Image (cartoon, rainbow, N blue to C red):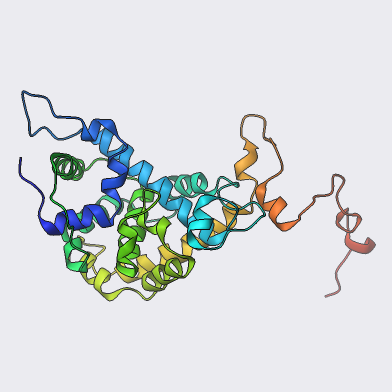
Amino acid sequence: MAMPSLDRRAFLEAAGLTGAFAAVPALLAPPAAADPADPPGTDAVAEALDRLSLDTMSGLAVFVMPGPDPYSRAQGTPRAEPGGVEARLPGFLVDMLNRFVPFPDQIAVPLLRALAQGAGGLRLPRPQDEPDAGVARLDRGLGLLLRNDATVPLAPVVALLLNLEAVRVDPGTLWGPFASPFSRLSYEGKAEVFRLLEGPDADLVALLDRHLPQPYHRSVSGLLRFLANGLLVLAALGGYSEWGVFDPETRRLTGRPAGWRASGYTPSADGWDEFKGYYQGRTEVPG
């Protein structure tokens, strides 16, 4: 079985893929004896990408809304009041990115392919250990997913971008707790990642431009700025909303939202008198 090149292995490690894939048995299990080069199926690769996305979004959630959780402690900003993890913000971010963010159609697969094909040009830290069969199967499985043009939602692509930039900001994030390098960064390191994306990062823009097809060529800097700003806005919106305790079946809250507890917000059951009918009895507005 051919082992991935140093550049390919550096991408797999820096993007957080090797750690996430290790949690999916179908990826690291020995291949069938009849075909020792058999890669894992696209479903297994997609599952690993989903795991990586949720972990990366946990690191983003506490960047915007720190709390008493391990992710907040790792970035150096633990707080006593409820934060993004308690608000179920990671799940909100994944859901919004995959289903509702107004991003150009069919951009996720080209972006992921561009990263996978050219990330070696980002001067990522080189792996120190020898690759094993599991890493080779991981690489082949990802290639199979991209060759088949399978549906790739936006959250995994965003997670890969954040993790690649995290390793460039601090190569030490290749190792540590959590599955994603971005979640291992300090608070200041995460701020630097967003500075690079909004800059935008000239090396990342050049890499993606070389590999993206038309009509996306030469539009990468705008896409990165949109993503960077949108991620922070989405996180603030989700963290202080009722999403985490809203039951869509009953259309009622199942508890007090973490954002309400963190901000001290207490809704009035009957509403404020000032907001009933016309304000202060006014029935018209002078021209």
